[in-house]
Image (cartoon, rainbow, N blue to C red):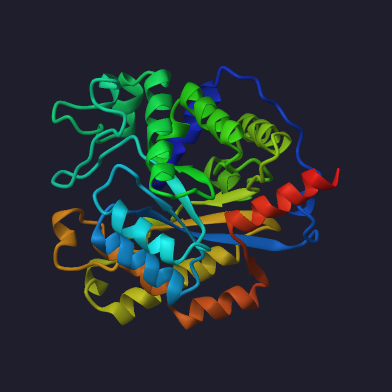
Length: 338
């Protein structure tokens, strides 16, 4: 996952758009009225709706643990069950995990806009492409835009009003044209967009300090802020690379200790501002190995989120949990006060 994100962000260096911005003199948290040194964190569960196990893991991470946000893959088979859950829990921070890939071999899904309308998005099986690279190779920006809107439309038809937009496998960051359609959709619909546009200390470390890249991301952040939307200062997306060692797999206590230690160490790297930390909490059953071999990593994420050790670390580090819903309410209050 981290390697994929590196490729995605490096591709942005080729961006056609010269959206340059100076190094921010204040965080987006400060702009929303939080103290200068406030460390705000969104603990975000990806891939909800992908499977029964994904739903159960996300719900457990939020109800029994400290995770406080999630996003839903609308083309997937277990979306209706989670939407029914949302109707009973309307305050949950749930976004739209815009999905343009179908990466598993035996568990696949197709575009909601219809194969005949977005032929560049589907492979020979009629499913979405399994890799980001294939999407970029075959799909036009218009097709990507059409599918994003179809997924948003289905969500609204089901009574699901997403609190934010983000990108499955980072596909929307793999092409400058895709990225601009993504940002445009958020601004047009007034839905916050997952895009780190602030100091980006974690991404800077991952990218070995590319100033040009940081300037481009800040430029996009400025666009979103000026459109009345909240903006992330940073993004943490390393947890999928924290694979559980073979000798620990199957032993929940040991997996929990391993993953919790990773997350606690990550908390210590957070800088003041708004950071989103991505995870894939899953309550793996006997069927999940037939979907993906990532079960231990995903189960480890869930175990970490329900670990009292991690909850205590949040307090010890002075970290305040926030949601996209709260951030948008803050942003609206600033706009209305002017």
